[in-house]
Amino acid sequence: MADKEFLLYLQECFDRCKPIFIALGDEVRLAIITALARTALTGPPPDPSHPKGLSVKEITNTTRLSRPAISHHLKILKNAGLVDSVQTGTSNIYHLTFDPSIEMLYKLSAALYEIRKESEAAAPFAPAEKFIV
Image (cartoon, rainbow, N blue to C red; front, side, top):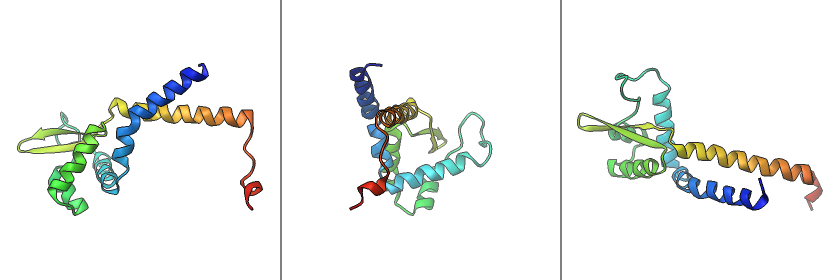
């Protein structure tokens, strides 16, 4: 891949990952994702047609924030493609999703790794102690 093409690709990866970085830049949202991950990993869902997840009330109990605050954070996570919801009765059950934006994070990580590999091959990094004054 030519340098200019690669840089355009890298910029596209960053642009498409921005909503994820914004969503992950808050401790409350990280706590919500952790709670949803914990729930997803604790066995099969009660209803096989729906993924395992938590209601706003259950997330509120986990984080000790108000329902409106949790709803705000869930909206950001949903817009970033990290969380989705399924309506069951009068509640929405939120769960982790593996939206294509997660694939873009992987591509960005791979591109950055490629840059590191190429830069180390061109001019290996000097040990950090050489730069200590």
